[in-house]
Amino acid sequence: MVPDGYYYATPLLLGAVLIGWLASPPWAAPALLLAVFCLWFFRDPERVVPQDAGAIVSPGDGKVTDVSSVIVNGSERKRISIFLNVFNVHVNRSPIGGVIRDLRYQKGKFLNAMAPNSADENEQNIVTVEGEGQIVVFKQIAGLIARRIVPWVQQNDAIQRGERISLIQFGSRVDVYLSRKAKIKVKLGDKVIGGETVLAQFD
Image (cartoon, rainbow, N blue to C red; front, side, top):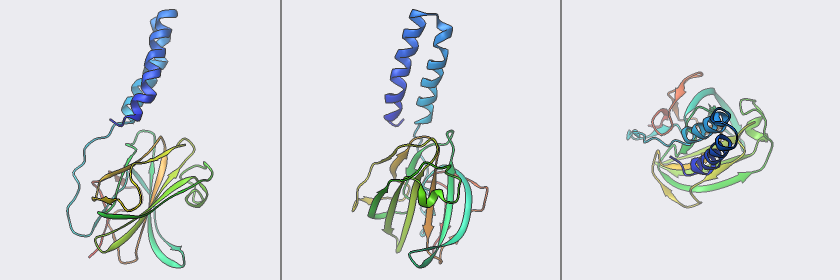
């Protein structure tokens, strides 16, 4: 359980008790259900991280909504987009082991995270990890509901593949940018699990 869950659930539980006492127990049901949802939403299950050399694991749970080639700073990169709905685990993990070379927060809009322009215009956290002979960049993109990205690491931190590095609160999107040499292992519509599903492989 991520501690944030208690911050949201505790006031709701207290509110449910107060409403039940002042009115009647049935009136407390909405607040109680919201409290239970918050505790469930901020769950943080353990994951079995693949140890295959060159494996790039998914940074988050969700559905693959795009696999394409894009131009980033004049170079061609492969991009995998993953949409996280409110029912997915929202703890994000590092795709590879290595060192965080850059951690940059960019303010922006709160467009639908599935919209193509959300990758450029929405509020986001951009993480660059160098390790295992590769540089992997991934964006944590806020959506209509997601209004807070909480990083747990800093620039120059050493991390392991699949290590917890951040939390996105409520629905959102994660984009992973890889070099052209990456062999993509997922396709459009696939369901992926953060820290477990191999998105791509490097020789």
